[in-house]
Each structure stands twice: as structure tokens, then as C-alpha cells.
Image (cartoon, rainbow, N blue to C red; front, side, top):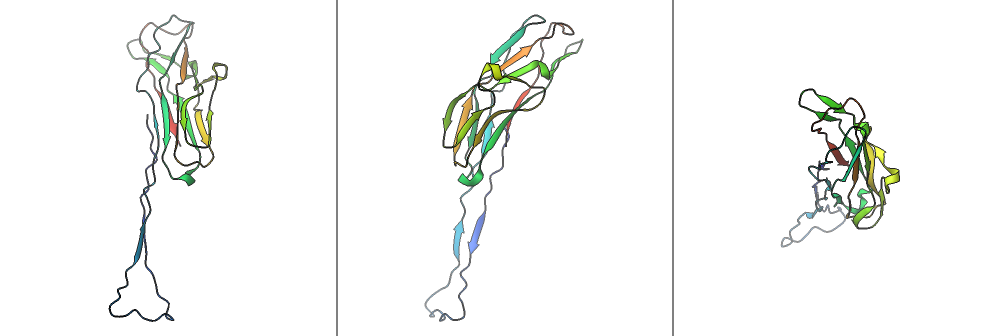
Length: 183
């Protein structure tokens, strides 16, 4: 999923006002307003893989796979500040009869370290190691950037781990959505 913070385009026109104490311009001089146009502010975007398969496994097992590269690109002006990438998940549902659900709390995530960064500031992985993985029962911080540093970007390749319950599941294909967002 890609969430965008819309760019801001602003034009400012400054008109020079002459105080009364200054002499009037000669007939041959023309007075024109001074103009200044602010450059268009850039965007803060996130891109993530469209789909990933965790394969198959029996009840009581775990399935894991790297999701593919997630990238945050911050092209906002230097005073824009920090950003935080968040990850969340839906439940995983088998849509064929009988409909069965594996709760999102059974999906774990860890960002791992950055695979690439550019720009200044500090890039902070949400879960730098497998030991720090978290369930996606609630939205979690995937990655963040601190300090005012202007244009920057970070990429990482997160790992998803699905714990298949011992009971209450039926053979079939389960589908859910992992969403990355940026603010």
C-alpha cells in the first residue's frame, strides 16, 4: 500500500510599497511587483511488494518468508522532520466453504536492519532481529527516521512468520493483507 502526503505548491507575490518620503519614480521608470515562487515541496511515500506467499504447512507449524523490499522515500523540504513507517495486518481467511479464519495475532513481523539508506539523520529499525519480532495483533512501528535531515530514504526486507493453529483450521488457501503506511 502506498500512502502519500500530498505535495504543497504555494506561490507568494511580494509587491514593493514605496514609503511617502521617497521621491516618485521618473516618468520613464516603471514599478513592477517583485515575485517569488516557492519550490514545490516533495512527497513522503512508501512502497511495498504487492503479494507474498508463505507456502503451506500443517496445523501447529510456522511458515516464514521475507516479504521483499519496503522503501520509504522522503523528498519533503529539510524542515519537514521525522517519519514513522507503520505495519498492520488483517486476519487470514479461507474464503471457500467452510469459511475459516486465522487471526492476525498469529502473524509476526520483524523489519530487520536497513538494506539501504540515503541522507542524514538516524534510521531506526522497528525490530532489528528475529528475537525482537512482534505480532501484528495491533499496528506496529516497522521503521522510523529521526532528525531534520532533508531528502532521505530507507529500504528494508521484513520477515513474516505465520503460526498455524493446532485446531480450528481447514486445508485450503488463506488470504490476508499486510499494510505498510507512512506518516
